[in-house]
Image (cartoon, rainbow, N blue to C red; front, top):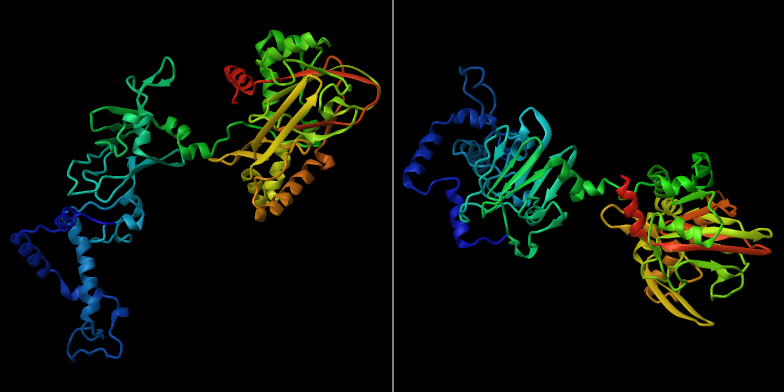
Length: 529
C-alpha cells in the first residue's frame, strides 16, 4: 500500500511523540527496567553459535552459578525492542488493529497474539458475558473502542491520524456476516429512505457516496445503529440482517422441495385434492399448492371433463399463458401441428418450450377421452436426477450449469408458421447458493451445438450422458394413467414428462400457466415459494 507523505509522517506520531521531552521520558523509563531478568528471559535459541557460555565465579549464589549464553546484539536488541515496545504501546494506549488479516496490520507495530487474546483484540460483544452478537470494523486504527455492554465507535475526521474502516463484520445467531457501507446506507428502512406502505425504496441509490462511512456504530442485543456523516441514523434488526445478508441467503433455499423417485413418491402417498375444495376453499387450494411446490406435480380429482371446466380450474391459481399454441390447447393424434406430441408415438422424457427464452412454468393436462390402449404418462423428477449427478460428478454438474445451448422450434404446417429460439444451459442454478431452479432438457428441440468451444464439446456430451442415464433409470420413472376427470399440474421447470405409445382415439386439453402468478398465489396463502 502506498502512503502519502502526510500519512507516512503521521504514523510514528501515533506511537511516540516527536517532542524531545517525551523521548527523554522514554529513555528514563527504559533505564529502570530490570535488565538482568530480561536477559535471562531471552531464548537460548539466540545464542551465538561457536561461543561457549561464560561460567560464573565461585562464591556466587545458586542463580549466578548457572551458565548463561553469550547474546548477539544483532539478535538481542530487536527482540528486546519488540517485547518492551508492546508493553510501552499499552502504556501509551496505542489502539490495536481489529482486522485479522495480516496485510492490514500496522507495519510499525506487530501484534503479539500470545499477549492479547484474539477475541478480545478484534471482536466487540454486545455484553461481556454473551457471545450471541459480536462485531468488528476493518481498518488500521479505530479510536474509542472501550469495552462496554453497548459499544460506540467514533471514527473522527483526521485522515492523517487513521485510515477509516473499509467494511463491517457482524456475528449473530451463529452467522458471520460482512457488509459494505454503501449497502448498509442503500437498504436503510427509515421513513425518508423506504416507503413502508408501498414496500418500495425512496432513497436515490445513485446519490449515495461510494466512499461513504458512518460516523458512529452502535450495536445492542437486537439492533444495529449507524450514524452517517449527514447525521442520518439507520437502524437494522439483527434478525433482518441474518435473513437478508449474503451469508444468510447462502444458508437458505429459495424453494423448499422434496426430491423423489418413483418409490419415494408412492410411499409419500401425496393426496389428490377434490375439485370443489380446490375451487371454493382456501384450505383446498393451499393443500394443492403445498403438494405442488414440494413435489413439482399435483392432481385434482372430479373435474368435469370439458375444456371449459379445465380452463376454470387453471384460472383458480394463475393467469393462463397464451403461446403459439393458443390459450387452451386441445389436441389429438391428427398431426395438426408440426410437433411429435400430435401423433400416437411414444415420447421420451422432456420439458416443454425449451425454445422459449423463458420456458413455460406450469403445464396442465386433462385427458377428456381415450378409447384404446397405452398412452400412460411418464413423470421424472429432473431435480432428483440432477442431484445424483451433483453427488457423483460435481464437475459435470457444473459444466451442465455453465454451458449455454440453443433450442429451436421451426413450424410450417397449414397456417402455422413459427421459428422460436431459446438459449440457456441444461441446468440453471442460483449463483449464491447453487440451488437448482430450472432444468431445460429436450433432445427433440435441441438445436445445433455451436455455442460450445471444441475443447469443451466432448466433456459436455459426457456430462449430458451422465444426466440422461439418471433420468432414464427405471426406478426414477413414475407412470400414471390419465383419465377423464383427473387433471394433472406439472412444474415444467423441474419435472420431465413423456408418454408411451397408444392406440385408438385419445383427446387431451390443457394450457400453460404463468409461473410468477402461481408462486404469487402460494405466497399470499402463507407458503414459501
